[in-house]
Figure 1: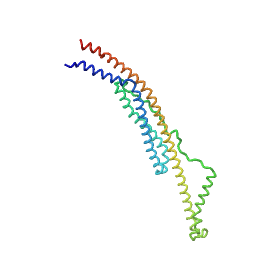
Figure 2: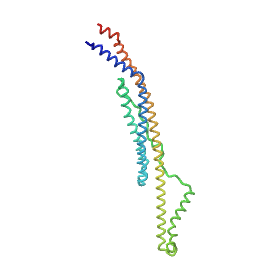
Figure 3: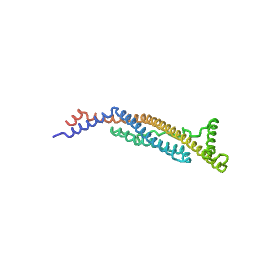
Figure 4: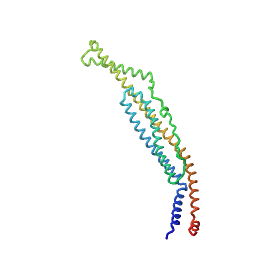
Length: 264
């Protein structure tokens, strides 16, 4: 008849040896792999989110009216801060199960709240980039533009002879021509102002998003360094405790002890 007790002891001894093989330091390599993979994933998520925000901001600048464009810096600041919080929250949510799996595969006993991730430090990402403002122009450039605009205003009056109407002999048409010139000047000024404003907002958006990308990556790197230091210490201590337990049970199930028990 087979000795079921001896078979059970041998099976348990094999289980303990397999468990001990997992307690030889491999947890550190797995931890670093999880952290590196989490950073790559978070960087990709942040890049995709920032690209989407850049497209929304570009549409806001190119299509929105002046009142909407003036609100863009504030809206962009709020959106960037929310984006950073979302990226960090997604990183934490994906990383915690991976770290717990490392401990679970080794039957490690850790605090119920482990792992405790360092908090993010991203207050006001867009505050580092000043809001766009119109640049003062030189007097020479202003004078040149003024002369060009006045020539544009007088162009309809000068074009009257080309239409067969004398400029000075047609007083009834002169106000109409001057009005058309003034309207052209106003339209030109507005178009230039709108174009300059849009250009400033596009540059501001690029600066804010670039600063946000650097800040998110830097803060994520800081959190990873702090987390690795704390997690390695906690895992090392738990591995030592678990290995002592396994070694103690293996000592009780040594072959000679098993033989004595079965012989008795």
